[in-house]
Image (cartoon, rainbow, N blue to C red):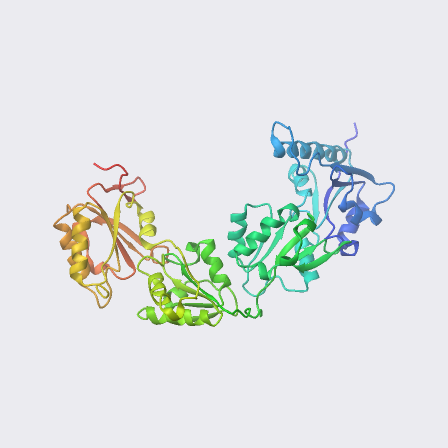
Length: 498
């Protein structure tokens, strides 16, 4: 009995459309193949086949893999995805029959076979069973950048590739939070993509490329494109902004950005977008240093922590001169932070026409609570122990009121080099109203490299271990602290009271 050696499978990338952009390896793979397979819509025409047409011989066996549907509805019991899965199974079985018979099969793919390509569905079903080689191809992303004649990304810039089929909010977040981007699969998604670009503040930067290196190629500013004229084979491009001059504006704006308790992982997409899009970053130097390198050419103005009003005025003056300014704040800017300082100055008559908005961030209390468990699971009060801006007798009265109401208390700004008595005074006051065994969370540098989160008791709280990088969470009468099997003590406050 003769044993047939299985044939070889090729996934052949053909590039963006011009046959001259096919690689030598792609041409060789087609020449070696016995079977040429390609996908098509129900009309039967295949862009992949048209690119490779001059290399397909009369003795090639052609396998046209025709999709049963594209975007229309289906009565398949598994829905759209189920119908496609059945198609992929049937198509891969047809190719497997050729491979089992010892024939070499080349599956043609526009662009690159493993980049949003139909070939990948064959690859996942066949590559573990047959000798397989994937021939990479020039992607539509590279083709679009080449036709625009603009760099996609330079230096530390990040390129994000996004399918236009994502929901608008998700598109907006991803476009706002990146340096450069390419949005694929436009066509009927174009209006949604355009709105997302506008919401992300990137519409003016966006370029449109249609059928790059194909007949009917078109490039222009995306904002000027007629939505009714956009085919599926088009992309939106946000090219590199290095060396890009800030636009001349009659009036800028100030955005107060909360960066969370530590560095880049704590940034929301909206905050990251505001930082990416700003011409100037203004803030306390320590907080500015937490901001990742977002865009070369941005100007950073750092200052001391004790000049909040001056910093706010400086930012508003820049905005009056047409600059987009991000005022960087740690944590949430509305919680003992920069939002109040900016808004206070912004209410002066000379700044009344400067747009100001505030973007929230993860505040230190919530970050510390999550690291410790859920001690803020019920009602709580937030109090700053700093007596620089309010007298100590006010702080003391508020501590007594919160303790008497049996609220969990989050204590911000507990101590510093020049403020050393506040923690001890607060502890002693609270011991008059709370049980000595009340759980206390001592959270230092949450999210940072020196993070330390401990759960101890109110009577064991040592003021000498508390500094400005520490936040204290004082439990209520209901708060519990339990040592888990891994040796970690967690704290939580039940949602039911009593």
